[in-house]
Length: 168
Image (cartoon, rainbow, N blue to C red; front, side, top):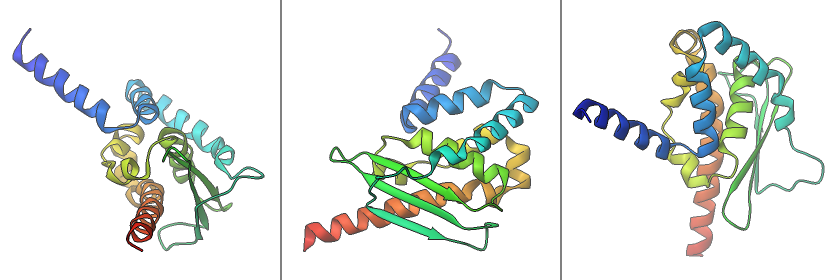
């Protein structure tokens, strides 16, 4: 096998290990799509963002609902960490939240389901371009990283509180 191919396979294998399995499948799907289908799929994910809202009876370890400067409306992030240390994220989005933010909400809630808060916090953000494409990243850079930043921040607060509880 040529050295270049072995190196590329190593890089791909490493990349697969960096991302949670569910997120990796979503990334791989988007990378295979031509630009027009990629955008259609993003719209489809945006249409499903409502399915990521908290369900009746769900309990959360942390809730962070606020409107930030970089977002058009209020966004709520809800984190529950189960007895196995796995994170379950739900989100609420105000009616003015942009389509791309809605898409990333659905993608991240699905793709990060069952990851640990530490895995989410350690997640490199380079996969975002692989999902939305470089053109949309260039045009809407703040928007697309916003949801990931909010999810990471709630995981950091959770982990900080866990560490403080262990010290006390």
